[in-house]
Image (cartoon, rainbow, N blue to C red; front, side, top):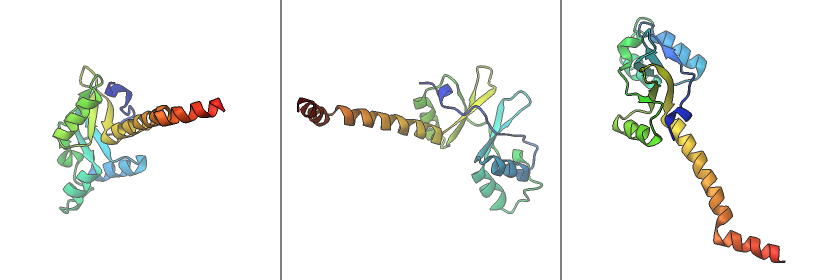
Amino acid sequence: MTIARLCVRNVDLASSQESVWEAAERMRQRAVGSLVVVDNNMHPVGIVTDRDLVERVLAVGCDPGTTSVGQVMTPEPRRVTEAATIEACLSLMRSGPFRRLPVVDDGGRLVGLVSLDDILVWLTENFMQVGQLLRRETPRTIAARTSAQAL
């Protein structure tokens, strides 16, 4: 399965010139933990997370009103194309380590964002379905069903 089916298409964005305060306020309003920083052509040039704001701004005493997103973002984030597999995304995340990857089209333009949480939710849902199937089809369940039908 490709990541195109899992990624979030409505990505919250930031400009590298805006203040950290503006970015934090957008994160709060939209209840998200990250913003993808894009250039004028929608190419991802950075990513800023709530953790970045704590560690790179608040914890070191920077002024959120005058510190720009560009000063604290992670520049040139690793990215994946829509055709990437879940396994490829997980491998890339483990090599980072990071939890979010911008998803780009063949021209390098942002089309989505995939997080470790997105992948884990998908895996959990699929494992639950497999578990239900296994419970239904175990020899003990089949024998009990057969015995009940024979009565």
